[in-house]
Length: 268
Ligand SMILES: Nc1ncnc2c1ncn2[C@@H]1O[C@H](COP(=O)(O)OP(=O)(O)OP(=O)(O)O)[C@@H](O)[C@H]1O
Ligand SMILES: O=P(O)(O)O[C@H]1[C@H](O)[C@H](O)[C@H](OP(=O)(O)O)[C@@H](OP(=O)(O)O)[C@@H]1O
Image 1 (cartoon, rainbow, N blue to C red):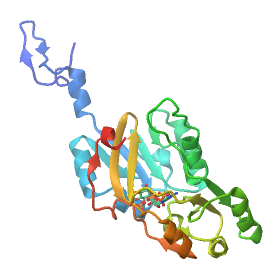
Image 2: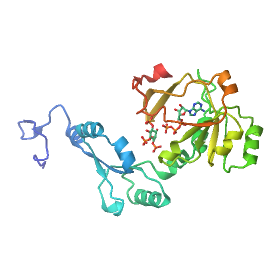
Image 3: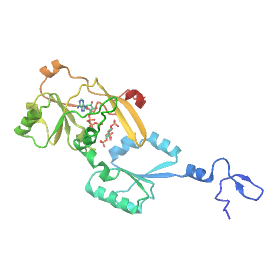
Image 4: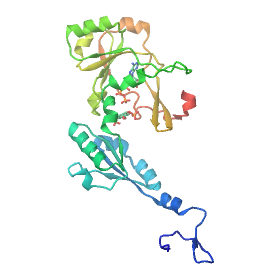
C-alpha cells in the first residue's frame, strides 16, 4: 500500500493508483534532495571563498553551507553530505581522519593524506614533473628549482653548483594559507640571496609574456582563467639589476581585471 502523502501530485488512475507525472518519484526526490556542506575554514578563507553570490547560487541548487564549530565534536554536528575544510595542524587532521572512519558516507574535501603534498612547494610540483606528455602537442615542465633549508654561504654556493640562472623567484617552501606563505621575491644575484629567509624554493624565472593561465580542475570539469602575471625580464635588466625585490600577488583573482573565463580549448 503506497502512502500517497509520500507521492508527488499526479493524475488519479482507474485503479486508484496515483500516476506519476513525466518526472519519476526518484527524480523528484533527487531534485528536492538538499545537500548540506559543513565547512571548517579560517575567517580569511571564509571571506574570500564563501561569498554571498556563491551562497545564493548554491541555495538555488538545494545546497546549504553550515559552519562547523571547531570547539565541539565533529560527529555531534551535522548531519553533513560533504565536509569542506582548509585548516592546518595535525590536531585538526586527526579530527578529520577520525570523522572519515566513523562517517564513510560523508564526502570529505579533501582527505588530509590527499593534500599533504600541496603544503610544500617542492612536493606540490613533483606530480607535475612526473607527468610525461611526450605524445601530446604541448609539454608540461617545472622551472629549474632547488630547495634552500638554511641560509649559509654554502647554500649560495649550492645555487651556483645547481647551475640555476638568475633572476630567481624565491618562494616560502611551506604553503600554510598565511599571507607570509605568499610573500614572493625576485632575486637578481647570488649575494642578495643572503637577505632571504629559508626554508625556500628558488626557481628560475621563466619569461611568459606577463600572462598566466590558471586551470581549475574538479573531477571532469575544467575551468581556465587568464590572469595578469610578472612581465618578462630582459637580458639588459638581468645585467643591470642587483638585489632582492618582493613583489605583490600579481596573479590573484583580486589583482586580475581580466576575468574572462577561457574555454579550455582556447587556452590549451
Ligand atoms: N618560475 C616563475 N617564473 C616567472 N614568474 C613566476 C614564477 N613563479 C611564480 N611566478 C609569478 O609569481 C606569481 C605567483 O606565483 P605562485 O603561483 O607560485 O605563488 P602563490 O603564492 O602560490 O600564488 P597563488 O597562491 O596566488 O596561486 C605567478 O602568478 C607568476 O606571476
Ligand atoms: O587565483 P586565486 O586568487 O584564486 O588564488 C588563490 C590561491 O590559489 C589559493 O587558493 C590561496 O589560498 P591559500 O593558499 O589558502 O592562501 C588564495 O588566497 P586567499 O588569501 O584568497 O585565500 C588565492 O586567492
